[in-house]
Length: 242
Image (cartoon, rainbow, N blue to C red; front, side):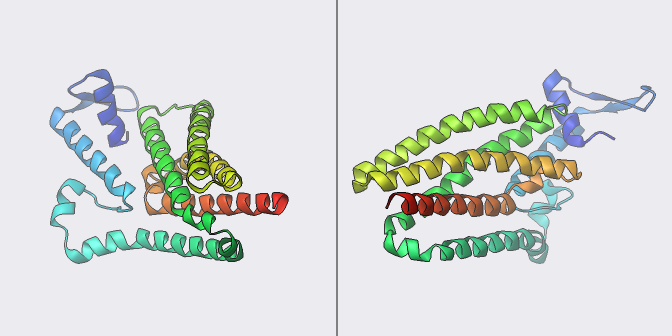
């Protein structure tokens, strides 16, 4: 009843060429040979790569991904791209809500791609590491792991926010908008990390492979959140100080 990925990871972690199989009474029923472990590793690794691209439901991806028909590929790839499309439409709607601000302060529009990219880059890093940690350690203490990640991403956010602030200050001679963009980056980095941990935990709790939470779905959530944070901070600071 053990998840195949767990079997392969146990073999690697303990330097074993085969893994014994026991029943509920701990009686040995046999062993999983090296060839099977290697195939599990190959399939699980390929599945993770496919999931990160929003492609799911290949039973034997190492073979099917090459031999599948055009329509099969379409069926398996299209649904999650619709999720990404929905996220893109919602993001456009969020930008539209702040159209008046963007018309007056064009510099805010220039940095939209940078804000969205940083959210995705940090989110992908955090989510990849977290999902792998969940696979390696089934008793992973989420709270302590999250505290460490918050510390790491707070430092990353401060460093990246300071860099963006200096870029705006030097390139555009604008201290105020440098502050807006720098603060937005700091908060976006930490928020993206939190989303990237909460999504896999949620999917794991409802007995769905946490890797499903990666790809277009996670990207849409992070993009939407980062835009809301960015424009909210901009509007609040413009209202208070200009």
